[in-house]
Length: 129
Image (cartoon, rainbow, N blue to C red):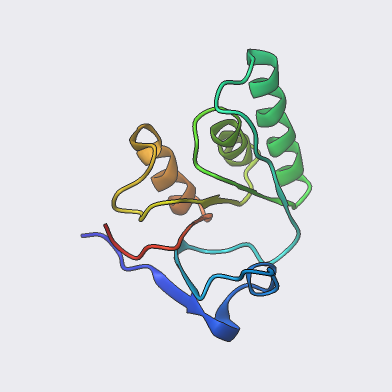
């Protein structure tokens, strides 16, 4: 059975979201958001292989230094960033346009499950479906 996400709203929203000019009213989280420093790594869905490798290696090294990685869930650089974070033994956060039970892209469903299982988080504006 799918574990229910944690609902964050108002004062429980992370400061990085709460302080946005157009802050979301609520988000849903599967897993654990990082408590320390974090950096976003995002990019094209169609990177060159050197760019994909660089994103993976950068994310791994950042995680080894205690910095969490935040990225979307798209194929390409986003996927490489999450893979690298996991390789580096660190925390990573998927900022997704869909609920955990209906991941997008579907091809990354197993990666998203792994992110949560290994101590990261899946953050979405949608609770279910």
